Length: 324
Image 1 (cartoon, rainbow, N blue to C red):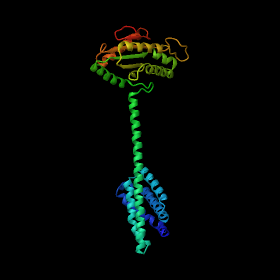
Image 2: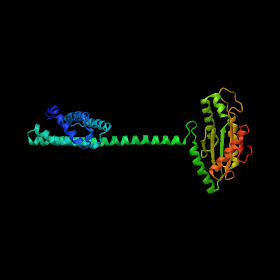
Image 3: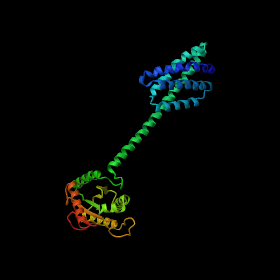
Image 4: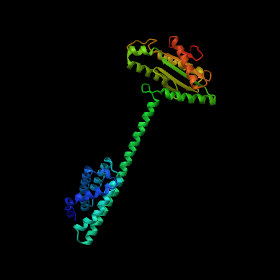
C-alpha cells in the first residue's frame, strides 16, 4: 500500500498544497501570496512522503522529527499554530478521497483510512505540543530579555556608570525618605557631602582616564569606610553624598575625617606619594540641628563643604562652621 500511496505523490501534491492554502487563507487571507503557496506545496509534498515512511515502518521517529522541524519553521515564519493545524485537518479530509481512488476493496480502504487518520491525528497532537513548547520557550526568553532591559534601564536611572554608586536623583529621593523616618522615630541621621579639590586642574593635567580613576578611588573609599546601610551616591560631577542613618554627628565627623586622611595619601599618576595630590573638602550636617527638611539639610552640608574649599580644601567642616 505505501507504494501505491507513493505513486500519488507527484499527482496529488499540488491539490494538497492548494487545499491547504485555501483552508489557511480563510484564517489569514492577506498573508498568502506566491511564496507562502510554494512553501505550502513543499510542506504538503514532504508531509506525504513522511507519512508513507511512517505507514511502511510504524516507526514514528522520522515523522516526529519532521513535525518538530516544521513547528520551528512555521513559528519563525510567523504562522500561528491554529493555521498549520487547519492545514493538517484539511489533509485529513483529503485522505478519504485518496483512499477511494487507490483502494477498491472497502475493508482495505477503511483500514487505510483509519491508519491515515491516526497518523494525521498523531501529527496534529505532536505539532500542537511542540509548537506550544516552542512558543512558551520563546515567550519566556522574550520575558527574560524584557526583564533584563528593564533592569538595565533602572540601573542606568539609579546607578552612576563610572563609580557604580547611586545617582543624584536616587540619592535625593532616598534622603527625603530617611529624613522623614528620622523625624518620625526621633532617630539620629547625619549627612556628609564631599567634593574632590581642584578636580578640573587634575583632569587637565592627568587626562580623563586618571580623572575617572580619581572618582572611582573616592567611591571605593566610601564603600570601604562606611556601612552597607549607608547610602553612597555621586551627586554631581565631583560631588559625593553619604547618607548615614542611625549615626550621631560626632561619629559621622570621625568617619569623614578618616576619609579625608585616607584620600589625601593617594598619589596622582606619575607623581610621588605626597599630601595634596588627591584631596577632598567635606561638609557634615545632622538632622534636625542643621535642617529639618531634606533640602535644608543637604544645603547646610553643601555650604559647610564650600567653606572647606574656600579655606584651601582638604578639610572637614561641620554645618556649624567648626573645622573637623
